[in-house]
Length: 97
Image (cartoon, rainbow, N blue to C red; front, side, top):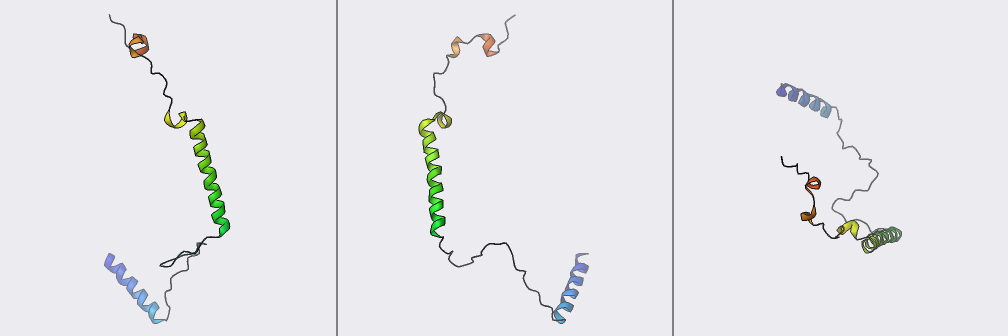
């Protein structure tokens, strides 16, 4: 089955090439520049300035909250309750019969 399909595909390609139809690669309209084996151009100063401002705000937010609310990251390290003071009912141990 694959041989028959391959043969028909080859026949179609052969007739198209005789008629002068040339296959061309379609242009990709993705809206972005494509750099292959070439240097990427420098960014505008306004883009770099905005990126630095956003980066500064993000780091300020992270460090401020680490300073003012460290329990969110490190947890609360209060006194751990003494397990020997827990009752059987609190531990879920059934009564002995």
